[in-house]
Image (cartoon, rainbow, N blue to C red):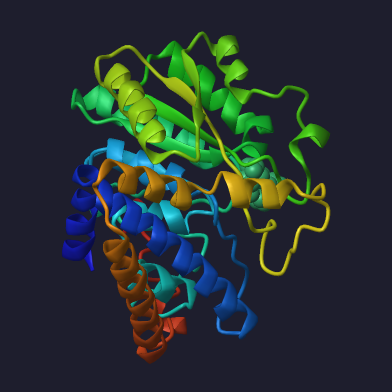
Length: 334
Ligand SMILES: Cc1ncc(C[n+]2csc(CCOP(=O)(O)OP(=O)(O)O)c2C)c(N)n1
Ligand SMILES: [Mg+2]
């Protein structure tokens, strides 16, 4: 629901405990989506992003609701971080009319213009030129809005990445390129597909600043994204941010990622989990108590279950929706 999404959007922008809670919510929703898929309640495919919660929440904390954000088919977390409700997301994933675009898009096509989420994209790299286009709109109109493109490491080998960064640089567009370097493309470890270690280095070719960021730390992601957005709004052009992160899930659906080196997942999960790390920091600061942590865990679990129940009670998108939202240009003589 739009008003709820706007309120949730603001919570993440202003409150670090809300950021912690949203990260817990993202993890719980992704885990539940994997179960729903296994139960046959999700058609098509799904790509989950457990382990990458800090990037989603840090970016959402920095961007304004009036900014435009594009992301990928692995976008449930970014959508929730930007304010979409669990029902908006689960409903869409289950193809129900209660979903964010009425159930016609599914897992890979979430959208909510009220909080700045442009459609998420199934095509690798496709959101990059679209974000540059949104930034061009802001520049032409003279508004102080900016755009953010969130995409994966594999996307940085796609033509749209290079064209998008080049265009944004030469026109000094107000856009931030956020690369989620989770070490894997589709079933392939990065060392098999990409000849450099730090993707931030690619910014040099386009004469734009870049920064390598700890993508497991929402405060670091927030600070880096905010700095890049300030730079963009000041008319100084784009920035490439490389978020070093790790995705716990395989590429999609039932991929258990047997191709990962032994111990790699365990190392990230045990030692660098973004939710555990942020919880420990907030507790050490005295911002969060263990009792609050428990309460958040219970509330989030109940919220996700309620969303599943409500989605299941909602009608499926019907065949009559096929031509909704399709706009035909008027032709001469009609
Ligand atoms: C243009 C294009 N080529 C290939 C695919 C198939 N494909 C889907 S995801 C993916 C890997 C992308 O990896 P990355 O950008 O690192 O994102 P991640 O899945 O790790 O989030 C590929 C090759 C696609 N969707 N679009
Ligand atoms: Mg990747």
